Image (cartoon, rainbow, N blue to C red; front, side):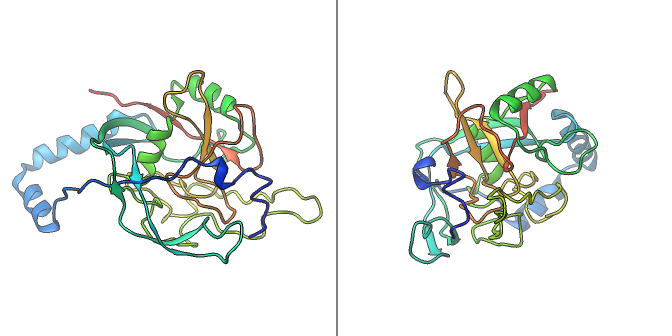
Length: 268
């Protein structure tokens, strides 16, 4: 596991305590859901589907639901041998538990893909929080709040990974061990295009929220804004929705850093 995690500041001290919680979820069974859809007039269904994309701009998806601020996620099986990184990667989590008294309803838009320059297939790297802030504002958007990014990643089920509770090394662009060039000591660029890992998708359809690039967000309630980095990147790290790297300032950027933008959702 000595793959330069310390060099990149990815340490247990640099992350928020991952205290996860879960409130009983109320879900609709498949049969019930089918019956509900069948009871709706086709015109009503068509109208709803036609209106949905209008809530967000091009390339963005609507995220709406009840977010749990404090979540308990218990690892059932760790992946790595004893040492400094033995509690980094979890092979399987128990069902998440919401510890908050109340969930918070969120409704916003988020970029489906990590930001890339026009005409480029790879997401833009060497981006700092200040780069993200300037770019998002120029597009009529904003840097995502950490809570927004987390909810877009985990959904109401509070998934540890965007794709579920069991780690899958093939789902996202993560878990590469050959990440440092031995000749230069620098990270090897292992970015992937947005459509390269179709299973690396959150419950809301947002891509690459685990691995690929560490994405800058704004820590909720901070003034002036404090940055955090989410999702880790292509190295074998936590790569969970709740984990955060907070050791860097607003100006830090590197081979592994990028971002995506959020915006308010239209009420029309």
